[in-house]
Image (cartoon, rainbow, N blue to C red; front, side):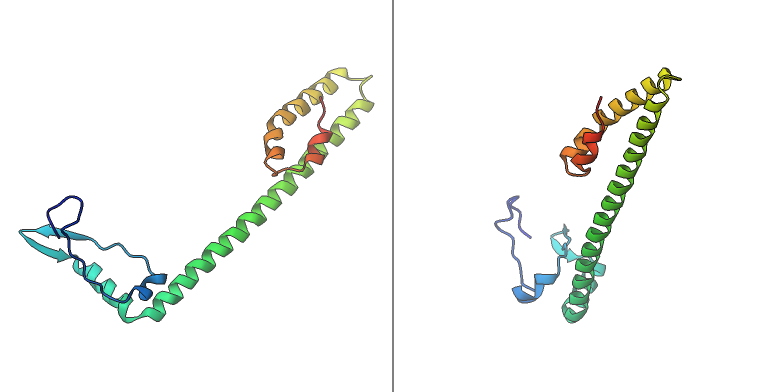
Length: 144
């Protein structure tokens, strides 16, 4: 390790050919102590294991990729389920509004309350519909 802050006077020694590192990302911690360079012993052991067992690193890389894929699928499914539940809930609010209109002559206050709820829903849910997280057809039922 050199003294120049830019690292231009540092020396690096390759541990393995460049193609070996395609599936492996590792941080090498080096520090200078009393003029000598020391690699942290535990990290050195780990690096040696990685170099000596490339098949394990490949398995690990595949497992990480699979984890990312499964997480993406799960997030999509959660979003679809949420969207479906939200749309079902909005439909029930709309049905309640329509039913309340039948009783308007008996209880105008309840109808006024439901209209306010629907207007607030429209304000809150408009951004979701614009982001594609809620069907525009559902939002069109929410009219103030």
